[in-house]
Structures are given as structure tokens and as C-alpha cells.
Length: 594
Figure: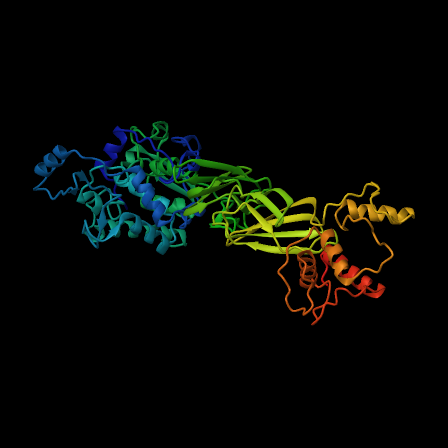
């Protein structure tokens, strides 16, 4: 039988504790929505469910520490109080821990074996380890510490409070057993007792009808209680009294013939962590968080196959480093993955997923440290146009880089025949680039792809750009040739060639003379806009005039004419040679391989 700590109970009940629910690292949206004292729903036969008592993974060690710090940050700096109590109780074995100008409280204290204080493990570690070893909810152990000795909120605890921290081995009719002294011993012994009952071990209050007193004084009476689960049976094995009607009506306060242990367990659990009687398994389990390739936070979770009610939706809250909340809601209750696609770039530290069922609402929480970003966006193409050096493409940089530096751009232009030409831009600072080695032709589409080390994004623009010479096709007859052809088609063709600078303006056109190979290269070169080409020097009979030399070099470099020892530029062009040259030129102008 466990004895109540009368000193701490008195302190607690004369000043009603106003709990602020949930974990220190989370803001209000993460907190359970239980207001103070839902005692109208208190059932002495169902104080806590087996499910909630056995939820040993409800908090990580870090979350337990955050909880302890939030409830009590050890900020009592009353040195006069410390000196007064130390002097008054120096002969009675009481010791208060004073360090760095403040009382050391539970959230900062270290505990060794037995009654050693000031070295060893943190309270958070001891609570968490006991919870893992005995498969008991650490929240139940935190509540137990508060309702037994007020250690969670006590700003100036002493060594004797720690030696009987959970009231284990302290019967109401005798002194506490020295065998169980020490914070670590107390916590682990309590967890072991709860585990024993929860796993079917001995209890003096088995399931079903049991007579339970209202107070250690039998004269205060009692009643039959139908104990409905093993977790509640474990609480009665620990504290064998139930609250009477007056005690329930009093909330956290006292009442005649009152017993407060199990009532306060229910109140603290409700106010700190939500309804302790929940039996549904709709709570999201195995909640994980990661960053995807777009540096977006992705939450994933599982729901038990044995859920006892239908889930309607999930509510999600993500917390940044400044405690700003970003709230979301799933559209499909079947979803168990959520990607926060619109989070602004920044640092984020926690998230919660709350399942909304037909009757219950249950949280899962996770802490992390992520630098999230908006996904990599595509650049915006501003223009594609012909310039003297080739085809120039300009763009605006992506508005977001996806959390990784932009490494390069890839520019692809496509001609009217569907052939693509591709170039890499490795200077990520550029927003303009000229493709200089495109064959003459008509280009109808440009695509720009931006790359970071994880992803790429593309954008396309359809626009017609020609690198061929801009030739007039209006029927402006040229009349200066004294031997202008008389048939209409030839007259139009010759006038077009003269007007566009493809053939020279002389007194005579000499239209019936054969075309030389050199003249043919000049004509095609002029049609193509007189592109620049490196001089080809291997022909032993390369033309000497500058225009012909440029035209022939361009034709050789682009495969329109062959590479031989002699060009034979003054030889007439045969019909066969003309077809080969036109075929090659057309393929070149269309972007096809020659």
C-alpha cells in the first residue's frame, strides 16, 4: 500500500494548480484540448485505459525534458528562503540543492543510485528508460510524480521529496521503506508495479465489482466500483481509495473525507495530455518526418488495423523555429502522407498530426530540425531572337531554388523539322545566352531546364526565329539588266535575287551562261546571311577574292561541298552537282545531319 505525501498534498490543494497542457516545444495548437477538470466524465471504474497506460512511446526523452522544463524552469532565486530553510532544518536531514544562484528543481537535477543527488542521470532519462523497460506510458509516470509529491512544479524540492518521489513503499499506516528510497528507485518501482498489473499480474482490486473506500478512515465509507480495465486496477493497487462526491465537486481542492490521489491522477492527465480513458487506436502511429528532393517537409504515419472508430480527417500543424504555426487539413481520411508544398523557406522544428474520429481526437508529435524550402521553380523565358552571333535566349532566374544552389541551365532549340540542338550553361549567374553554332534554318521552339543537385524544372516557349537571310519576296522588277530574261518566272526570280543581294548588280545578268561552282557557293552563302566561318586552307586552288573565300570556307565547314585537294571553283556546276549541293544545303538549313 502506498502512503500519500501529506506535505506536498497540502501545498497542492491550498493553491490550485493551473495546468497548461502539452509539450514545451509546441504551441497551443499542439496541446490537448482538455480544459481543467473534466470530472463530470470521471468514472471510478475507468480512470485510465489499458491502451493509454501502455503507450510507452507517447514521448521521447527529449520531449519529456522539454515538458519538465516548461512546467518548471528552476527559476526560484530566493536566497533568503534557502538560507532560512537550511538553518531551520539542518538537524533534521533536509537538504535543498542551491546552484548558480537558484534552487535546482527536477528539470535540472541529476540522480545516481540510492539517494545520490547532483550526479548521474537526468529525471527525463530515468522516466523515459523506465517507460521503455516496463512498457508504461511516461505520461502516467509524470502525472504520478505530480500527484504524489508535486515534484513536477515544486520550485524548491529537497532530498526527502526525491527519496519518496512516487510514494512507492510508503503505506498510510507506517513510515516509508528505506528499501525504495531514491528518485530512480521510486520511478522504476512504480513503473514495474503498473506493468505487473497491466500484464496480468497480481492485484488486490481485480476486474469487476470491488468495494473501495473514500478515505483511509473506514468511517468515511465507500462503495462498490466496477473496475473495467487492468490499468485502473493498477491505480487502485497503488492508491486504494476513490474520491467521494464532495471530492469530485471540489475539483483540485479538498473536501471532507476526501482522498485525492486517483482524482488528481485523472485531472493532471486530462489537463496535461488529454483524455486518459481513450481506448481507440486511431492515434497516428510511427510518425516520421523527412525532406524530399524539393526540400519540402514530408510527414508519414500509420493507423492501427484495429482502429475502433472511423477517421474523418487529419489536422496537421508544422512549427517553425520561432513557434509560428502552419496549419493544414487532409482532404482524404485515407491519406497517411502529407507534403508541405507551400511552406516558406526557413527552419522548422516540430509537427503534429491529429486524427479526427467520430468520437475522439488523438495527436502524434515529432520534433526535428529541417531547413525547408519552396520547390525548385522553372525559369521564365523572356525572349528568343536572332543576333549577329547566332540565336540569343534570355530568361529570368527561378523564384525559388528548392533549397540547393542552382548548378546549370540546359537550352534546347528545335527547328521546323523537329530536330533539337542542345547546349549547357554552367554559369548559374547568367540570364542570357547566345547559341553560336546553330546551322542556318528556322527555329520554332526553345526549352530551358534549370538544375540543382536534386531536381530540375523546365519551361518552353514557342516562337519562330530564322537564321536564314531575311529576303524580300515582293515582285519588285529589277530593270537595270540589259539582258533581263523575258519569261515571267525567270524575271521574278532574278529580280528577287538582285533585290536581296544574292546576285550582283551589273549591266548584264548573263542568264544563259553556266553557273560556276564558286558562284554557287557565294549564292548559298548570301542566302544564309553571310555567316562567319573559319578559313579553309587545304584547297590548292582556293579563290583569292575575299567574298568567294568566305563562301567556300563556309560551304566546306558545313559539308555542303567536299574536302578535296582542289575546289575547281571556275568549273561549271552540273545539274547533278547542283542537286547534291541543294540537298545538302536544305538539310543544313533544316537542322538535319548531312
